[in-house]
Length: 312
Image (cartoon, rainbow, N blue to C red; front, top):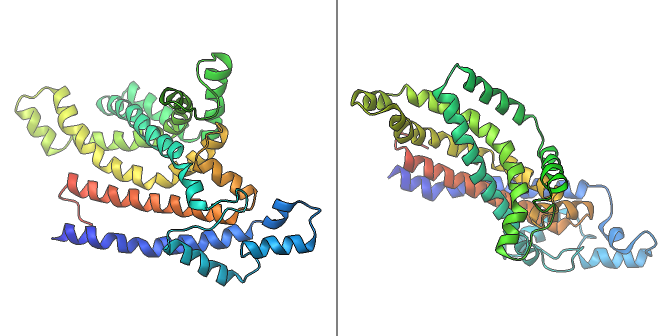
């Protein structure tokens, strides 16, 4: 009964979070120096032309009234009209969702494929040379910013070897996969360092658990004990770690999309910020906020389903 109550009530707890994010985003975007109307018309625009643009997009209204219409539009499933692109924000964002979602999913999958073997090597050799090497590599990896890793990968695989494309997204599935390899690897290398450290600690603890000890007592080989009992039990806390780091992951995709000119929501957000396109910035920020909330909600459900001992 408690679990069903959690599923029904937890989304309601996220409403104040989304409201707070909407307020903060609305205020911060208007603190950015510059005038959207002047960005559109240029420095030689007449005061009358500037006033007309501000009136067209509601920029001449008081901030509280602008926020009211922003929330009203959200309630109607709208996000206003882009000042830069001259189209509704929601359809504009929908055209940019696919590259970003593909980048996030492929990055998470790659980071798991990297982190699980590295953590397994470290945990099964705890206190010995392989463990020390993995810990050193993961520690240094945390300090490398994604944009630096991206530039290094471009130099090696695109400039020197010429085997992978530098920028863009492509039109066919093969082209899209090829264009996603370097951006996904950039994000995955950064994320896998954090995930490796968490998995290593969880695996070492699981190796000492009663379940693992009982399996050994039944004569089960150590390798089977590790992969059948230790690894699955270690993945549960890592699910929460991935959910907690979803904000960092989204921030990483914004940077990486800019480095690789990937036409996703991150690149759209950066261009909107520099163009003072308030509506697009607010819209993308709300989509990212909803995605973060949804991922954390799903992670909580998966955690409870995977481990009945966990209470929320």
